[in-house]
Length: 573
Image (cartoon, rainbow, N blue to C red; front, side):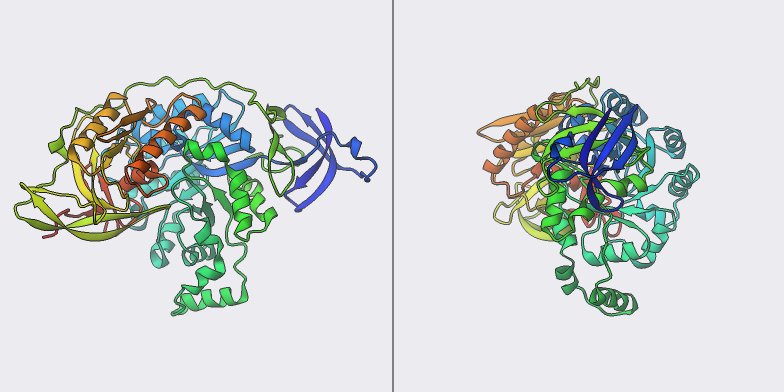
């Protein structure tokens, strides 16, 4: 295959016409040519040729579809590769689940690069469906499909010298594979100890100060633009972020000098999704993230490099640039500014022609992974002997995975503590789904539901069933619907009820992204009618069970203090 095109060279940050030859899916020749304004008919592609986009940190399971179905929607937006951490399905099915993902991914023309999940389960304070120890990690790291050790969420284990955690880090170093990080609000001496394990990236920065310290200490910073966690605005507006910093002490004096001299750029290395819901994938992927970054002041060519050559270099991928010897993954766009995808090529073969995706998606065989008994209203009651009590409350925020500890005074009726819609204090519970059938109850603020309940078997990272609601009976009905569906999402109220089955490990569907997004959209509308204020309610709810993100969360074993890393009482005193 040989042709001429105007191409973006992400090595030199230039655009020029070139003659390009592809053999066996690899760029063989990339030669600049001269074309004057009267010779435009010599150019074969009527658009700009750019490298295919790479999402360097994403969990495919959050798209609620199989890898093959994800690929079909991603190529429409110019994405040709992802570095994906399959720790969601690993928490449910272990290595069996990871290998099912790899097998499904290999059946489509798309570049799936996997990482070995480092924290299954994420903590010892929850019940998961599987455990991956260091011997399992070594088995995975030997696979060609595994390009890194997945995000090390157990930062307390790293900092405090947990032997098993450090064995996993040592194995990644032994096999020469990068180690992804997950260190929200970890700083100073604790950050030094964390980085000493060889951890090289972080996608959990929530403010400029945090990102700058990590960058200065050698980490590569991922800026997250997901469905629930959207960190771009807070990180890319550096000047505004600097105004809120208290510059005192030796480290802060260094930071002030850096800010005053404006030598902090480039502070960021990658743009990533982390978690992307199907309805958002219909709108776009990294193509939209690039445009959003530019609107926030990031140089256009730098933004493109953050999703092409930068991740390719870091993860040792043979793609990300249009150069001889690299895999011929590229996109034809209408212009570098609009980034409307006209065609997508992977390995030199067209996979999206501007209208149609040119490959099919094979299914993953699914089995029932939800082993839980039906629940009753009493399972979701919290008892107290008195007329009123003060309780600890999880306060969540739209577009943010961090939560806040707060309290509320609640009335007690017939020995049962009552939620309070006027304070926006609802019930939240996690139901163990692997056969233990335990239920942990607590309270949450921020959802805004006025009635009904929502439930899901997507609850990071152990994926027990999580439910939020005002009424105990509605909560039981919502959970029971998820059990009947063998996993999925449900909405229940006095006036209506519906659900989205996710039979693949309770996380994904074999259905087309469009069909899954349509049903999810209906459920979102239903939740909105119930009064919910959150844009991505199911994804936000799912992260209320992720104990490794501060400051207060809930597992199937109880309410959890993420700052002190210990359980806490629901009722104060």
